[in-house]
Length: 187
Image 1: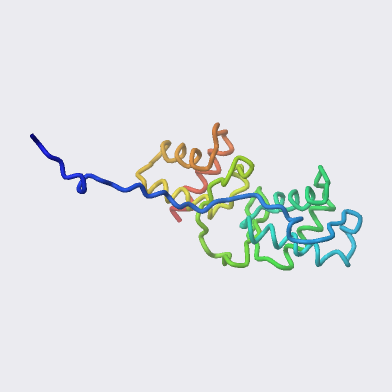
Image 2 (image 1 turned 60 degrees about the horizontal axis):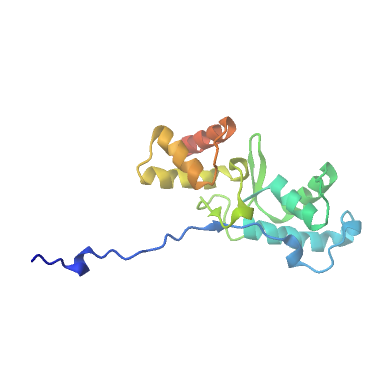
């Protein structure tokens, strides 16, 4: 009768610990959300606290996403140019930013230097899915590097990055975004 050394074959399950991205509610950071006062200078400290909450929890975060999050917290369905400009003005006064051609500006949380390469944050739940255009190039490049380290190359690399990012159907624009991140890794 053959025996097997169970201890030698046992490989313990080690959960993978990935950074997670979750949407946050800026209204949780303040008391007194007031759509009527949004454009008043006296409201700037409340707006600043809301913006800080989103940028520090979700950042690097795209300017349009930040403006949308702030608008929704005020009960607005649409995010018009005046709202975007007001949010942008307050955010630029308090956070480092990085402009990406054709996308917009990403605001960086205070705990992460703008020259840092952030880890890719996978969606924490179904409500926290981001499109590839909502992920800064540095963060997407980190996912590319991770997939390259797992042996993915060429088209398999593109597909692996898309899958890990939660993209179920990769459109042409998404493919181009991933290819740009691959080039960024090579620089």
